[in-house]
Length: 481
Ligand code: FAD
Image 1 (cartoon, protein in one colour):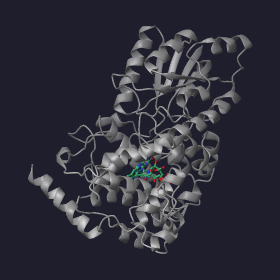
Image 2 (spheres, helix red, strand yellow; image 1 turned 180 degrees about the horizontal axis):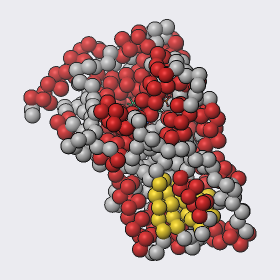
Image 3 (spheres, protein in one colour; image 1 turned 120 degrees about the vertical axis):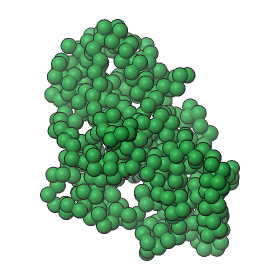
Image 4 (tube, protein in one colour; image 1 turned 120 degrees about the horizontal axis):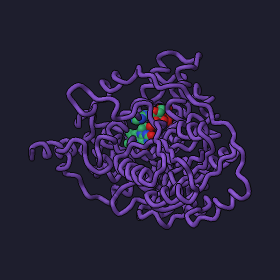
């Protein structure tokens, strides 16, 4: 019995239900496709620059890890609707399996592929893997889905999520003849042939994309070691990021204030079930730290719950009245924000951390996003797109949902008038300016601290006046109802 396991956002071999099921029944062949969204708009969102680099590196590791298990990993690029049925036919597999994904446009594509495969007489099975709680398995009384986190969390927090699965047993390596059959097909590429590290085909003219290939491979690569092997090591050291979490998760200067595992979750190098089990079983953690951190895992679940139920969360406000919000078109201010030259130290330091490392501390993400959408009145989706291109954890659910939350138009968003003051945030969470001094001057705009103290980078807006302008814009939106 031969099964094709289609890998997507699950680049691991441990706790992988589809892979385990394939090996229980017989032999497995892996496939990963660099998918392009078809004209019908179905499929996953196109990967941003940082994510393409991460994916390339992570696939290299997955290929090696699967090879250790005797399982080949094939690569292809193009429309999954064409490639998956073609691969299943060419390889004469009995079954196709994958881990489910949850963004509406990707799900519709998967349904279509499932139907095509079944019509061609193949077994098709999808499995859980990316989430603890599949979005359709929980709903409030009298409603379709939860729009507020706390009742959602209370409804799902005590659910059993099953046991973590070990990696499957090694299978007999393929014969030379099998290998030749695999290499023969026209859709098969090698990893480099996927073009994940080419900067020419992003379809985006953003500054980040223009500088992508070299940038990610040199500078950002200093901060990360993608792939499920390193992820497993980080899992073993989980207590470093979780110990003290309840008190210190908001301190951006401390690299251990949070786990730093978001890209591992994003690419499925670790499953949320592995993380939950690890956090529950670390004896050295206090219950406060343990539960505060586990709660964050469920924020990610909640983002997916919303994204599953809201088909256009990356472009349409959850609260429809915000479609009328009087945002401003200010390319120069947007460029200052991208470059980290707004003159607001916490925002500029955050944008520099993002530029240098592909990651930004959550507290600073909130401050930078609030500054863009409220003090500069720039539409949230411009910031969301920049993050999408530059974050190594850029996630189809967490990114737009968090942006909408900060911009005030999301589900469960804080009231609009609670506008972050980035100077107060800095005094509170970076009182010794440790974070700000570390990063200032390292953004794409590169204004050093010395230049700043000579007034090269004056604040581009007055925080008080721009706050009042934001409140006035909000009132205008409401009065037009
Ligand atoms: P930890 O604090 O160690 O938390 C563990 C895990 O819980 C994280 O890896 C993450 O998966 C989840 N988590 C933590 N905080 C949140 C949160 N507020 N919302 C949802 N899930 C959370 N997160 C992404 O994974 N991808 C994104 O693209 C993304 N974009 C964001 C954009 C904005 C404007 C904001 C304000 C937040 C965004 N977040 C995003 C949420 C959060 O900032 C990151 O998940 C977190 O900083 C990751 O760091 P960590 O792994 O050390 O988190």
